[in-house]
Image (cartoon, rainbow, N blue to C red; front, top):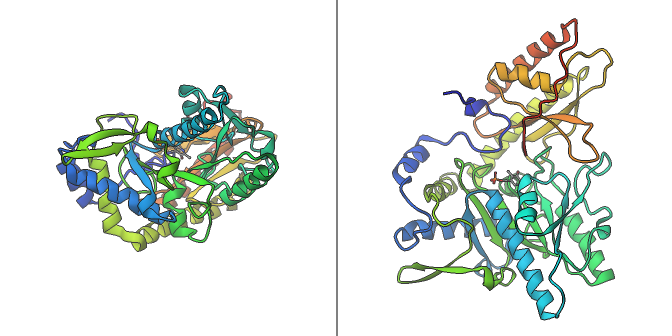
Length: 412
Ligand SMILES: *Cc1c(COP(=O)(O)O)cnc(C)c1O
C-alpha cells in the first residue's frame, strides 16, 4: 500500500505489466520449483526450448552445440558468464603451468552493479575503463592499456544502465583482434545484453553484436526486462559447449537420467520460465518487433519533447538503441533548483523518474533518465510531459533557492 505505483515507475527496466492470460498462467504455476526437473519435466523442457530460441535469436553458428540456462535475472546470468570466463582462464593457465593468481576482468566504469559484485564475490580484479564526454561508452579506445596475461575477458554492455546506449561490440572485438596479433592474448567477450538482447534482434537486426562475432563467448539477458516477463527471470547462453568448462556443471536427475545444470540457486520459481515461453509463443518474432517498435516510438516522442525544453534541458542521448534516454540540466547562475528537486516534485505526482550522478571522471554531471517499457502509452507520456512542464514552472517561480538536494537514492 505504501509502495510506489509500478506502472508509473519509469526508473526500472523491469516489466510491470503482462496480459490476463499470463496472469492466469502465473496463478496456475506459482507452485512449481524450477530445480525439480524430474518432478516437472515439462517445465524443464520448455526452459531448454527457451534458451535454444534465444541462441537462434542471437545467431549462434550451430544451435545444437550451444548450451544455456535460465536464472533469476541478469545478475545471476552475468555471474555464471563471469565464472565460465574465470574457470576457462584458470584451466588454460594450469595446463601451461602458470600462476592462476590475480585474474582481472575489463569493463566500462558505467557497468551495472552486478559486475562489481561478481568481481568482489569471486575474487577477480575489476579493471574499469572510464567513460568520458569523447568516449561515452566502452568502445575499444586504449583497451590495450588494461589487458595482460591475467585478463579473463571483456564485458560489453548492450544497453548501459546509465543512459541506455549500446557499446559497439564489433569495434571492441576488432580492438581485441589487434591486441591478439601484437601480444598473443586471446581475450573472449561476454555480452551483458540485459536489455539490448531483447531489443537489438528486433529493432537493429543488422547490428553485429552477438554470436556473429566469433569472440563473443556468452550472452546474458533479463527475461524480466524487454523480454516482457514479470520479475524473476534471466537467461545466459554460451556459443559452444566447449566454452563452458565441464568442471562447473552439476548433474540433476531428469526422466530417469541426468540433466546438466549450472546455477547459483537451488530452489526458485518455475512459473517465470513458463511465462517466458508463453510470451515467446504468443508474440513470436513479429509480435516482439511490434511491441518494441511501439515502445521505442513513445521514447522517441518523449525525447523530442524534452529536447524542445532547451531553455532548461540538454539531452545526453536520443533513444536510438534501447527505449531509454537521459538528459542534463543546462547551467544557469540564477537557477534555484536541480534535477533531484524535479525528481522529488514528479514523485509527488506519482511518477518515479530518477536523477543520479554519472560514474567516475564524470561525477560532476547529474542526469535524469526515462526508461520506457511496454504499457507506457502516448497518452500516459503526454500526462508525464504535462507534469514535467508544470513542475518546472513551479520550480522556476521560486524566489529563493531550495536547500541543496543531492539525495541520489537511486542505484543501478
Ligand atoms: C538490469 C541490468 C543488470 C542486472 O539485471 P537483473 O535482471 O536486475 O539482475 C545487469 N546488467 C545490465 C546492463 C542491466 O541493465
